[in-house]
Amino acid sequence: MLLRELGEFGFINRISEKFKSIVIPETTGIGDDCAIIRKDENFDYVVTTDMLVENIHFIRSKITPFELGYKTLAVNLSDVAAMGGNPFGSFLSVAIPADIELEYLDDFIAGYKHLSEKHNVTLLGGDTTRSEKHIALNVTVIGIIEKNRARLRSMAKEGDIICVTGFLGDSDGGLKILLENLPISENEKYLIKRHNNPVPYVNEGIWLASQNGVNAMIDVSDGITSDLKHILNASQKSAVIEIDNLPISQQLEAVYKKYGFDVIKSATSGGEDYKLILTIDKNRFSKIAEDYKTKFGNELFEIGTVKKGNIGEICWLKQGEKFNGLHEGFNHFRCS
Ligand code: ADP
Ligand code: MG
Image (cartoon, rainbow, N blue to C red; front, side, top):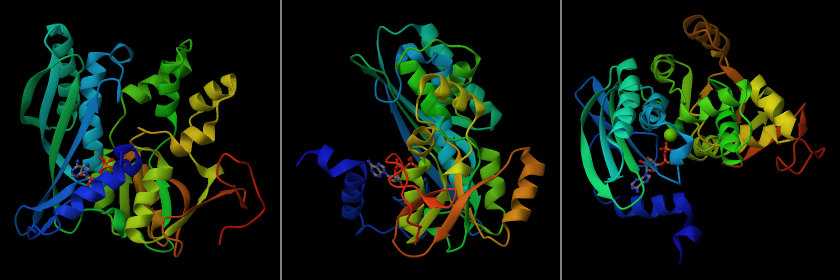
């Protein structure tokens, strides 16, 4: 059997099954954005690791080294944010070809440090090795969280409001512009920036995890269809999402209109937006959204509701009508 047939998540399950026999008390391992490890009677550590490989996750000529350094850390901070943790340290491992310019590496580290400073995350270690041709980057971030405050993918409850912390699809739009070598003006510049410089919702995640009524959280790394499904599967729930409520930037609208691209497709299945998706108790939603807006100046965009039954299923609505299979047009059946 080929890895391709098993898929990424099949492979992860296969690994995790083999380690179920080794149990460490007060430790939660594979299956969420971070592992949770006991620190003391009041606090836990949250730990995550993520890898970026040249030509898989980035094309060297399409991202500056400063941005690459920033992004390498950002995608990891985003996983800590998705738990509600407060990051304090990182480990950086690099595999690099020997003929790379030192200036390139200095700029890479400057970008990495820029974001580290913003969140007061220090570099605790790492590893450096030579590669033949391509750059591979691996970061581990460690954070701290008050015991029982971490928000797991499994915590969604029936009736919860599903919301996201920002625009969806921008990063996919930026990637499209880069891959198709489209001419770059202001809107395109914005989208490319969203792709190369995703902003992790660290302070927002910490605050949200301090609010009773915020239940499940995850960050959007693979698109909301895939990432919301992780919440639904882990929580044994389904969801109804209103497509017209998905937050879309005017820049994405404008660029996609110009080229006839599918906004909904990028907003639902485009990767690397690194917004948070969370589910909030419906009775507490208005107050939390209001306080969030006061504190961060941004909206928590309400996009749908958690339902029971049909575990893992997302029912997409457009103005109340069931949207059949997202890209196949409408039909007139309603969501169950
Ligand atoms: P995220 O997108 O939040 O980084 P992933 O989808 O990459 O999460 O991973 C899902 C879960 O599987 C995480 O808990 C992660 O630690 C775990 N995981 C991924 N790859 C491996 C691996 N090779 N070995 C062990 N655990 C893994
Ligand atoms: Mg994640």
